Length: 276
Ligand SMILES: [Zn+2]
Image 1: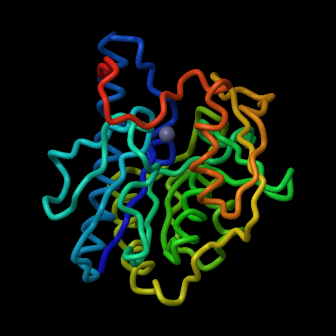
Image 2 (image 1 turned 90 degrees about the vertical axis):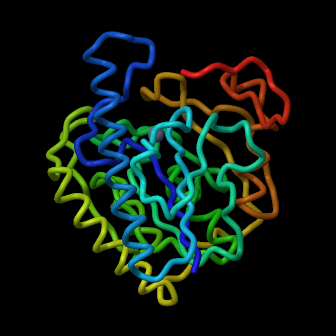
């Protein structure tokens, strides 16, 4: 059995603020490192659950920001991690294919402009406003096109509600209740990890019962956000129409390159990128 773990950081228990990458001050560096550690522990709980439930292969996708957040030296040595400069590879979710048995999602955040949710951003408008997807449910839809069910997710109360609306059977861990966009009543990390372990095991065990989340094509797609994520959001580029949501998501960024100054696109050649 192959299990895919999609990750982000905003939904992790204890996370309230976006890191300030430009600030080299001790408080900021320490804060960033603590958030990486909290994320790593939650991901590890999910990895352990997958192997204890019988997985042979587990792929972790480190998907927040620059794609290099998880302290992989502390991860269970049996898994493999996909990480490094986000968007420079061909695929958003590399190694997610029809051979994957189910997907888990750790640390998810609400879609852009969701009131009272921790650092909400990215709002995918589907079919001119018929409905909207967050990054998390977009990942679930891409998995759904491959017949892969999303069986478990974690994050704040708002993203949990969105997932429940679209995938009512999914196992969930509400890691915190948002009190504003930067304040929450959170589980203590050790407790969150225990609950994530248990929910991941339940979800994987129920992988044949939980239907893949499928968005029927053709799909008209448009992304709403802005550089600060502060509402009002605007469309980042033009609406595109494709036969499937996977194709629409894949083509959206290259098709709208002019409106996305931070987007470089996939490349097999070096272009001078340095980290951080
Ligand atoms: Zn993120």
